[in-house]
Length: 462
Image 1: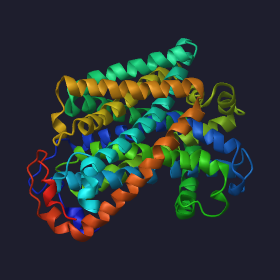
Image 2: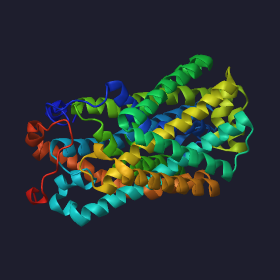
Image 3: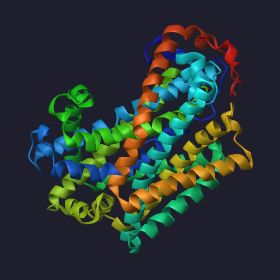
Image 4: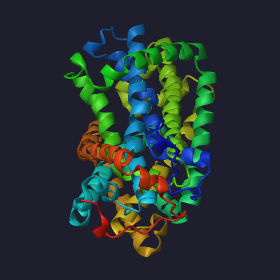
């Protein structure tokens, strides 16, 4: 897509104007997708892999080989693959909606592949499946966010982590995102994501400078080489990796979570891309965020592995005694200004998920109201829907994390990822169909910068 003639096509037509600057576009894209995940798992995940590497890795626990395996696995889970899972359906939606006038729904782009069969009642079913997948996926991510905030409050303020504390955090997140949602994309989400992305960079620079900088660079370089060399067999789970419990607990868990988010999140990512070319879309939705994910995991994963080794297993002890949500705060305790950084991290985690909730409920509301113009989500009905969906996802997250902890998060990811997988496969078919059959129509499209009305179903190709 990037190197084909389609890469030069402007989303929305030749005269379309962007609604966001490139900086705000990148910030919103990053914060809408995996931001909450990198905060929770950046320091915690490598501790699992270093201490209990799978048999197929062929390395001893807590060895240099285990450290390389841990960080290369982080690259596998948090860089190009998750953003590819988001980018494919987002690009399919953007071109179908803005350039071909398809409805604002999951069934809109799928009508390019399946014709009228994807619209009407069948379209309602497709949208419902997408909403179900997102509820499970967001609830899973909200669960790890709530656990992170609760762990930070316990460390910084001495508030004991409990079901009541987690319930209070969920309610606060829902309330804040509703207030932000009322402000719309150009104010609420834009301001929150701008704050988030700047804070991300400041925190990453601080940990890199205050932590074991040389060891982080060395481990990051060798692990990146391992990741690139083994990308294909790792991605396709060749050999003994396929049947190992580690693969199901980690790689499948992550991919399922991305798949659960992808269908509805794609509508939002496609919506904010108007005015940019397909090539720019791929740079800002795939290449840029993947590079940021690699940078973040190098710094936080590398720092966690090295500091754990230097302190005789302090981060491992925190993982075993208090759970994965405590690992990042134990990492901060080994750095200067630990208390201040921990408080700032709690705030960052809270705001990150508010941003993600805000953006996705915009898309959910548009689907529920069957609005062809996603920018027109106003009024009491839209607000009530946002509150309903936010409360529902918050309730599911609270129940699962309060009763089953991280196992509940994994369960939710799998429940949402399965239907999301089939939607993603279909969206891949939409992209191929666009390239082969609809390129002339997409290239010639000259829609205005607002959302076009969809064509009547009678004009759909069979």
